[in-house]
Image (cartoon, rainbow, N blue to C red; front, side, top):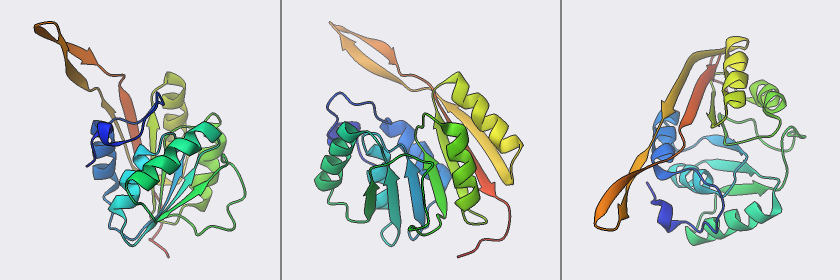
Length: 191
């Protein structure tokens, strides 16, 4: 697991190391999966996924050009070679890419449409994971998983508090809570 300070993060929002650790544990990667990451942001999850998939591949979707520059630097910094960086947002035409074994949604401004598309293209038995920091996203994930062909639904909330030096004292510096939702698409694994 990489430390936050190992990444190039020039004031960009990013998924903290504690959240990445729990997410990777929940995904239970085998090392050869095809993973779509939607809303790659700064690339912290992208890099962790890629390093955990020595025989797999990550298709990282990010539409923001400034964030793409940050992701490229983080991929270079960690010598990551198994990522296809896609400068676009979902939904989009995915016919040129192999169907994913897993999908991780870090963020999206059109979450309902993204969930519909990735839910359809995900392999049977594949895992869908989504991170949420807003109440609106929480409601969308809950509705999606309740009304879809996914089983093993799970949702957790993680609240990380770090110590911060304040003069001769240490105070608690609470981070925003993050929700991680996971579900498995019904059907026998294929592919």
